[in-house]
Length: 74
Image (cartoon, rainbow, N blue to C red; front, top):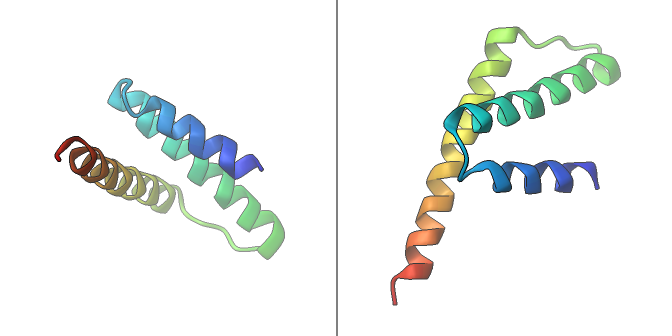
């Protein structure tokens, strides 16, 4: 349930500023890394969190733009 809420929030901010998008992606990966550290006793470096968040958001934006462009074209 929580992840659905985060995905909806990320989808809602795509049209907003790039800074807001990266902030939301970072918070998602930061949260995941804290859970991994707690449940699996595995720590993820800050640079890895930032890299994963940026790569994930860039990929998501690319996919969304392709979906949008195929829906617009007849």
